[in-house]
Structure formats: structure tokens, C-alpha cells
Amino acid sequence: MMNTMAKSVLSMYAFDPNPDSVAVDNVLRQSLQLISVFPLMAVYGYQAYNHYYNGASLFIHSPQPELSTAELILHLLRPDNKYTDLEAKILDVALVLHAEHGGGNNSSFTTHVVTSSGTDTYSTIAASLGSLKGPKHGGANIKVMQMFDDLKTQVKDWEDEDQITDYLKLLNKEAFDHTGLIYGMGHAVYSLSDPRARVFKGFVKSLSEEKGLTDEFQLYDRVERIAAKVIAEKRKIYKGVSANVDFYSGFVYSMLKLPYQLFTPMFAVSRIAGWSAHRLEEIINAGKIIRPAYMGVGEHKTYVPLDKR
Image (cartoon, rainbow, N blue to C red; front, side, top):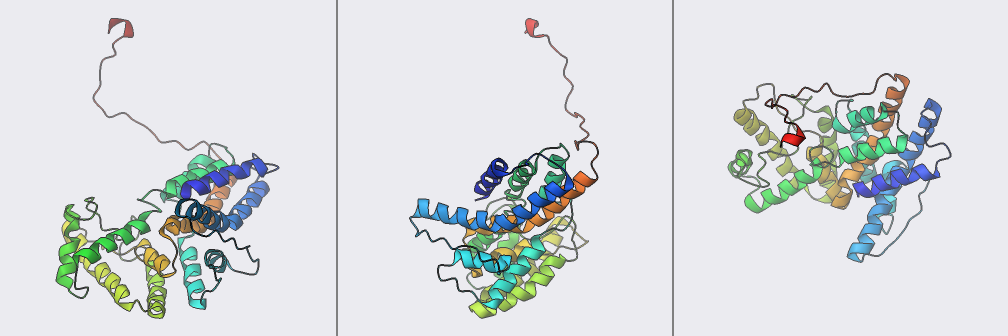
């Protein structure tokens, strides 16, 4: 779906009467259009995929201008168009919390780097989508869901903290995907707590109660608490370890019946607002092209002319 969205974004170049101009007013126009069509690209792209590969019924709902972005997504996805106020509210909160949290994240930095070359908006955003697609970035919430699916096969008693602690020894690369990572835990900037996760958690609890999934929410809560201790002890991290926003977002999307193929595109639907702001910032403060200071540190080898090989 992320590649589908990138392809759709690049296709928009051909329909833009002024695609290459990097004048602020032109880029602002392009940005607003991208923000408005990203939900449609994500949902319609998924529906086409699901129809072609799985034989699912192809139902197309027209966008309704009076709906919020969250309401629009649920309206487009559900055959009966029905959703509760809480479902729309928590998806709206998720989109707001994922919109941006600084220029140091991989995809926003990608936006700055590619913008600094002077290229067009569509090429820039396609590159940002490519960055967000990675499992270490936007794809992290899918890994959290997969990790919990594996945990549920190993931990028979969800209230037994000893069993959970034993499973979380996957830090030793002995379980799940053998990477030694507890997905959704830790953040490069936030240590004591990720404020996005703290805000989100209360809404997640409310939705779990509405869906009759409080036991599963409590499992997430236990894993969050125990994992923080296990990671701190194993990695000797004394500044603190906390859950990040991806820890709960996959659980929320699953409760909303969003297909897993849309988990990362939902991140893109949110983050396009942040990318647009970063692109405008880079254009307004245009300077030199961004490139790393590179120094080779490998073993020096004597040059041998080709004719002497």
C-alpha cells in the first residue's frame, strides 16, 4: 500500500499545471491537495488490492466534505458506513499524535534532504513515503501486533507476570524474530515517557471497554510495565525506558477493524501534514543542498592500475 501511495503521488505530477515550481504559494497549494487526497489514496488503493488479490467485493463510497479525516476514513472503509463517536474520536487522536514530533525522525529528515536538492513536491513526498515504509519507522506498529500475536501463543495466562517476563527475554534474540527488540518500547528522544503514548493510552482504554477487549488492554499494560524493567536491566539503561506511540496504535487500528495493510498508510495520512510543513520550512530557509560529511575509515589500499592487474 505504501508503494501504491508513492506511485499515486508521482502520478499527480502529470496532472499539476505547475508541478516544478518551488514558490511558497505553489508548494502550499500542492501540500494542501496532498493532505486532502492521502486518505483516498490509502483506502481506495487498499480496496482495489483487496478486490484484485482476495476477490473481495469492490465498494466505493464517495467522500463527504462535512466529515473529518477520521470520519471519512471509516466512512470509506466500512460497507455500512457505520461507526461510533468514540471510534471516530480515537482515530482522530491517533492522526493528530502521529502528525509530527520534530524534524529528526527519518521521514521528515528525508523531506528536508530531498527538498534541499530543489526537486518537485511529488518526488519529495514519494521519497518520504519510502522512508516511512520501513519497519524501523512507520512499520513499527505492525511489528508490535505480530509480536503480541506470538506472545499470545507462548503466554497461556495473561495475568501471570512471570510468564510475560520469561517471554520478554526475547531481548536475548531467542524468540519472535530474533532481533532482540521489544517493539513499541523505547524512543530516541523520549525516555521517561512518550507524551503521545500517555495521551493515547486513556483513549485506548475507553475503546477497549466499548469493544469488550479490556483483558487484551490489560495485557498490553502489563507488557509495557514489565518490558520497561526488563530492557533497563538488560541494556543497563538508567535514564528510563517507556512505550512509544506505536506500542498502542496497532491495537487501536485492529479494534477499529482496519486491515493491517493500512496500518502504515494511516501513519502517512497523518504525517503528510508534518512533511508539508518541513518542506515549506526548507524552501523558505533555502540554502545549500544537504549532504553528509563523509570520511572513509576502512583499510587503506594501494591503487593498482588496471593495465597491471
